[in-house]
Length: 149
Image (cartoon, rainbow, N blue to C red):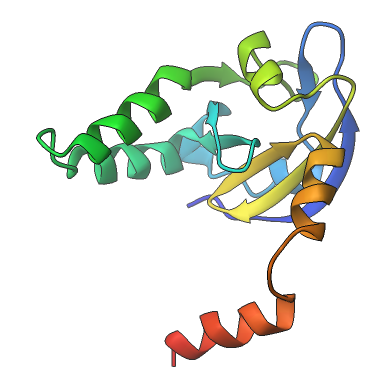
């Protein structure tokens, strides 16, 4: 099982390659075999799943109903953007141009470890996202953690 945490600032080269931070790489499960699936995320970021975690996502969406229009829309949107990626010898992953465009990524990226996946953001969009939350971190934490008690 892969498990990620942390925040890292990196750059994107002119071929769309991003180095995966060493602290994240060491938490990739050996069963992922340095293979990742990159797809459209939420709030204009990209989701990067190691192969072992992506298999769990696929298993989950297989349980969705093909007769439900919302389920069909979600599955189509998620999978139409999904591409396989492999770490190169310099621990970089190549992000396709259409995904870079979707996330408005040009030169700099913010890489977040989010448990089973990695998120890649345009730093300015992430800052706007964080600054425009309707509630504080503490208020959300109280609500979220209360439901788990």
